[in-house]
Image (cartoon, rainbow, N blue to C red):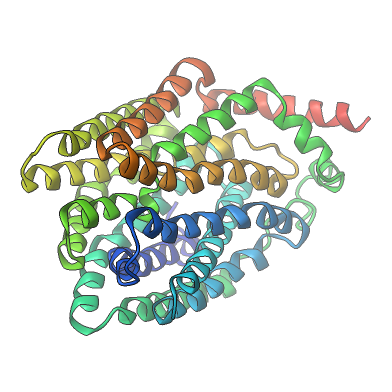
Amino acid sequence: MLSRQLILSLYVPATMLALGQSMVAPVIPGLTKSFEVSLSTASLAFVATALGALAATFPAGYLLDRLGRRPVLLAGPVITAVASFMTPWSHSFVELLFWRFLVGAAAQVWQQSRVVVISDTAPRHQRARQMQWMNGMSRIGQLVGPAVGGFLAAGFGLWIPFAIHAALTLLAIIPSFLLVKETAPGRRGRDEEDAELAKQGWRPVIAYLMTYQMIVFLIIQCAATLARGGQEYGSLNLYAVYAYNVGPGVLGLMNSAALVFGVPVPFITGYLMDRFGRRAVIAPCFCAYGSALLIMSLTAFFPLPFSFFMFSYVLVQATQGTTGGTMQVLGTDLSPPFGKGRFFAIWRMVAQVGATITPAVFAFLADHVSYGIGFVYLAVCSGVVALGVARVLGDTLTQVDKGDRDAAQQARASSS
């Protein structure tokens, strides 16, 4: 779990990339506001990032099978660095949307390829820990980033956090050029049967995705991304800026305070998911997150003091952190032993559809109904996930061996 290769090619890059990304997070709402656009229009900056991630899911998955894991993994951070550096130099809101779109696409490429490599190489009873510890290291990187980014933007200019983000991203990926090896079946000679199925293209993957279990999983996955409300893209920060007129400095400190509580969470959930199963962790975490969203809705329904909003903000961010990465663990458990890149292309596309539309849905509800109803909508989506995992999907860790056998049989039947 703590080998030199994992530390330098997984945990260190995750920390540095998250540090840079979190530095620009509290700056973006102010940057969008400088173009004198409404809340609904400003949310397009985050929708553009989500659209970029959505657009990248399908080609990234295909290229992971077609070209291999390594070249796709290395390309993502390079594109991220260029796009982030160019963001503050946008001459129009449309240009800003273009660079945020590219940042989202590049981040999806790196994340998707990194998870596929873990799926290829990690033992099943260590998979949750590797993935969640990667998320935990990302949270460590995010711990000081918002406060530092907000301070630098307020004191030295909006472009500084973006330039540092670009530099950190390039530095983070250097060890991967030396340490990351190709892990795709058929390119490293691991399993001839899996490699042969992979050569058959989309047909066996589609057949596997049409099974009842996978349809249920995809519905739950979509609900999970809807429940997060685009918070990874800044919807909650937009609420703080537009409803409470919070500046980048205060917003950065609030993000950091939330992350202090959330840093240990992925390390704990990763261990618990490997030790006690996925369901025992995921359902309670989404229940807690949904409850926090209902508490946040009170700040919109009633004239509560700013101190209550700050408490609710930290609570929502912290509980949302307990759900992070859990769907990825479920997806890798359920991924077939063949055509993983193609499977990820469809699975992550479904996930990103939810991530793409939910900031706009939240903004629409906020503008045309109320902020409170928007938070209630997110809480309902979170409840769907908890109920679906607890009562319908079951525990994928105990099902994974049987799932692999069924997937191979289904693929052989479809190709015959």
